[in-house]
Image 1: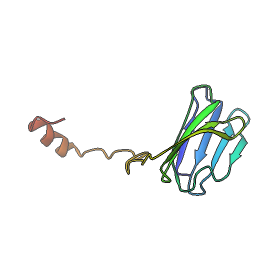
Image 2 (image 1 turned 45 degrees about the horizontal axis):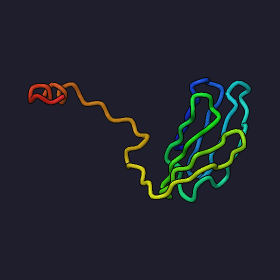
Image 3 (image 1 turned 60 degrees about the horizontal axis):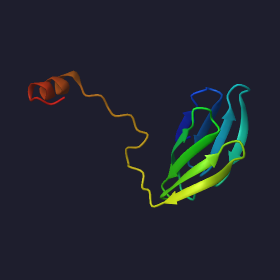
Length: 109
């Protein structure tokens, strides 16, 4: 799994990864709801869900953003030319206390 998202209603979740697919989960029942095989032609980099979990959006190293009907597992729209940043989905490292103090002294935050 490279990325995961949970809808605001906490009833639907989605995961994606190196297998190029997207899995949509029924979190209330703890069961797989929909499998979208080959959602992209390269690794899925991130996924987001609408608050109600009915719709989703994914982006990939194949330079596409796709919009999904998560009940049917169908792509309803696609946009090409997007390149995800290398830092997408990564948590920034925290600075050590001394580095933060040095930045504060220099007027940086």
